Length: 308
Length: 297
Image (cartoon, rainbow over all chains, first blue to last red; front, side, top):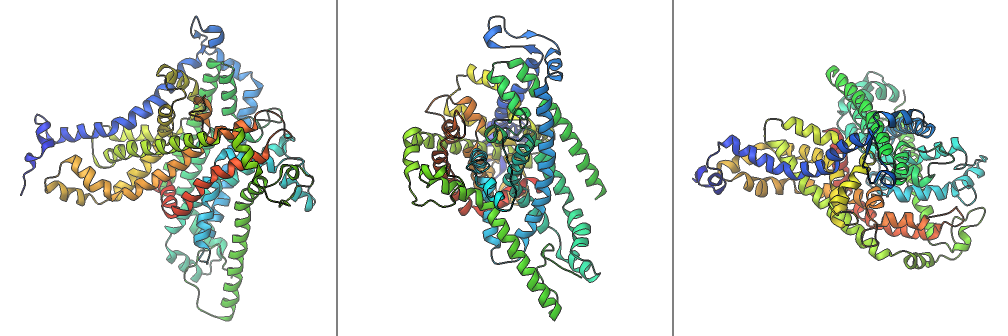
């Protein structure tokens, strides 16, 4: 039997106890991940917080560097109609899209779980919207929603719906949200499917014996059982979609007017105009919104988990 | 009493006449739902494909055509002439492969430490890594740009790869932690008793056991990186680093609907989708397992 002390690693850390040696291993293993996150998330975040309190436009303030303006940027945000409109649309987008993604996702998950011949095929197909690049989805739908040459207005015309899509503010919002639902419902469905598969069939059998119909089973078995997953997934979708950028940016360019401009696009525009300080402060507002929503989600999740 | 497709009934009720009718109705309902599902999922893909093989004169017809009179690959040829398509394709491959490889390596190391080694503050490190996923990439864009400029990493492959792999890192760590926790600790303990060092345990015991999980995360991160727009758009300024997603937006710029070359855009889109479709066709099972793992845990 080989003894533990004969192994090379032991010799190289001779002075350390076993426990200390494992700590060294843990630190070494964590270094690459932490370095990446510090470099691209934590450090830039601190810098953003700093910049948000400064006026900094390299074109004008290049010589002096950032000029401290206190909460000046945030005052400007409060009076900026575009920022306010973008916060409004972002929140509408996130709430409506997430609600529809979860609801439809639960329905699609049931289809994927149903025993029928094309179950395997349906599970491959469900990956398609998730896997197709958002760039292509956004531009493709822009083309399909085109008022003159697009297929969607044409198909709707056949069923008697004469609608202009991307040049009407309300309809443009609806269009952008529907595309987000098309793109991300499958992902939600897959996660919920895993939840459905975790529910014991005995529960449904017992309920059926007791005379439950599909609706009562759904209401009193399925939904309560997958509730923790619904909460986690909603939280994830909300937080992720609060930062949505490419879809509205490419599909409508934020228009008509500013009706589909999201916070992220406003940040992008301000950075492109070199208003670095102002862009950073809008970034901080976005982070604050994400933090508040995330905290609410965590609270809901914990409360639900305890009651289980 | 109505049972329906909504209840996933794997065992059918005892056979009876009404049960038979019911089951029949249920099957039809499932197939109808499936048909609607197929149409909704595939329609956009179909329209983009048709636009790509349509002669450009027929593309701008009113009402729109749903199938070209004479399918042509003409728009593919013109697209390859107007953007450096093959260079962008190569860049996308480097970007996606590099990002997913780096993220899986860094994440698997961290995930092992977080899942198996109890050290002071491990929970805090885990939370910090996971919660940082909520930090919107666009909110910290400006300082990121300045930092990259300082390190001379703008318009470089390694700069883009570092950014992208870091973006997918939290999710990858979370998924891999849950995979590693599934591996029974007894296996490692046995190896340890046999005299293996920690490094040997990681490389010879744990790594082979979680190889499917690593492969899964590699595929998922490859697709996510392949599809990424924002980072290449902001941090890649030359032909040698721009990716296909940027190439697609370059085709659209600038102008109104009339001047947008939808035919060439569709052609590029189709060629950009092909590798992704191949991955999901071949790795369907793995990807589904990997995607749902993160949220369930």
